[in-house]
Amino acid sequence: MRAYLYRMAANLATDHIRVESRRREILEQNHQPEDLFETRGPERNCMADETLRRLQDALQDLPERSRRIFFANRFEGKTQQQIAKEMGVSTTTVENHIRRVFEHLARIRDRR
Image (tube, rainbow, N blue to C red; front, side):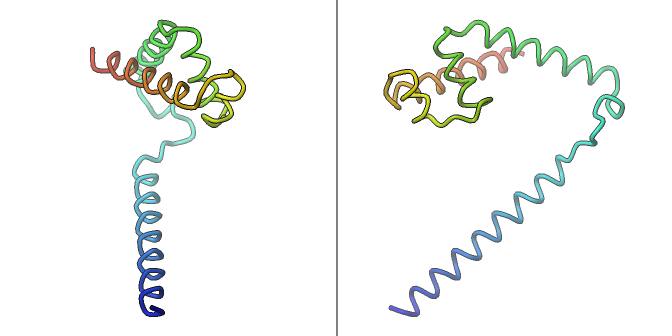
């Protein structure tokens, strides 16, 4: 029993190190210079502006409740449980609104 617990603990530690290593690797690969607008060309800036405009338009197309739930979760950092309690709805309802927002944004993204 003791050997099993030690092996399990060692495996969990190995998995944790592997995940953290991969996360660090991804962050390093995607590292953006601090002054993005000077390092990107005008074309990339224009594309970024267009993407931002499309995102803003897509969010405006959403029902008010879905938009409020999404903003509270993604931009205010509130948990689904906190949002559900504040709005007087179930956690499942909050989850469904967030899922629908992501589906909507994915459809907008895929229209390109």
